[in-house]
Image 1 (spheres, rainbow, N blue to C red):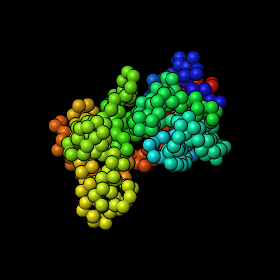
Image 2 (image 1 turned 180 degrees about the vertical axis):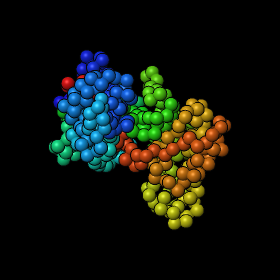
Image 3 (image 1 turned 45 degrees about the vertical axis):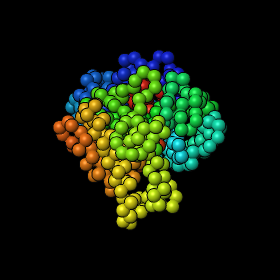
Image 4 (image 1 turned 90 degrees about the horizontal axis):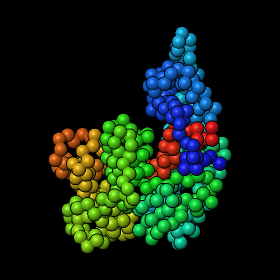
Amino acid sequence: MPAAVRDVPGAGGVRESNAAAVLGAIRADGPLSRAAIARLTGLSMPTVSRQVAALAELELLREVPGLPATREVGRPTVPVDLNDDVIAACGVHIGITTTTYGLTNLRGGLLGSERIATPSGEPEKVLGAIADEVGAFLRGWPERKIIGVGLAIGGQVDAEHGLLHHGPLGWRGVPARAVLEGVTGLPVHLDGHVPAMATAELLFGAAGRAHSSLYFYAREMVGVAIAVDGVLHRGPGQSGSIAHLPVGGDVRCACGRTGCLEATVAERAVVERAVRAGVIAEPHFGLLRGAAAAGDQDADRILTERARALGRAVGILRDVVNPELVVLGGQAVTDAPAYLEELLGAFRETTALPGTDLVEVTQFGPDVQAMAACTGLLTQLYDHPLSILGA
């Protein structure tokens, strides 16, 4: 069984750091010659050659003979690249209504994924049932060396102790890591779902090349994550919340106030408003979107109001953080592309800072939950490749 970094007391050191530097350069810019790796990392050619050999032995790298050979110190050399055919990471995202799990390669490419209704019942039984489903899914990939399971979820995550706290699900201090490790036999990495998605943007998206970034997520829950110089900010103790950010409007929140962000834009709240207004017969977002596309003015108004509330929230947060890049994610954005311009229009009207062309939509689309849940494991692998794979 691969060892998670928390179980490797000696993880780190110069050799590990050099291996991580080589692996990171190839991840970002590969395929690369050994000379190019040396230039990008500042390591000597002998050190690069040793690390390439070690990482190739671990099946993380491979030579790419189909590409034109380059010349290093007077002789041809074959470029090296990530080996996407062996190592894989599993990810599980537990949502309020839907649980998604999948498997990615080293570049974060989704090899496969499944969605099931989030089971109901006692949390340990729910996690056990999900773990059984994941185990059956993973048995379909016998050729892959799976390094572990990443679990991403809303609410509060105590990664150090492997515990979950999730208000909407009624979970308090649930020993998620122990349950999942016991069923799957694999190391488990826990993270909040918004930090996990932001980490995916840093590792494989545009945020990785920005000095500072703000990741904004909205679906059933809303959240943000901030990164500077490629490092995600994680405050002490519990994570922050933007659920009650005041965005205006007359939607009443459970807290007793009106105009709170999550109560205004959450998918369930939006479709329930549409049902009460007689726009759709049952609370399903696809029905609401279909009604708007068919020309129903009330459906269009509801989705426009939601998009504009999202845009106001992004504008407020942009002014507070002043990042170089804003990335929008979550199905509130990706499942309603026709309303993106309404969102961006409200953003431009709200922000007081100069420049409004810094907003991008995530490249991961509706697969972001499954893919992002894998990313914490992949981040550990890129940072500690020798320790993770037992070299």
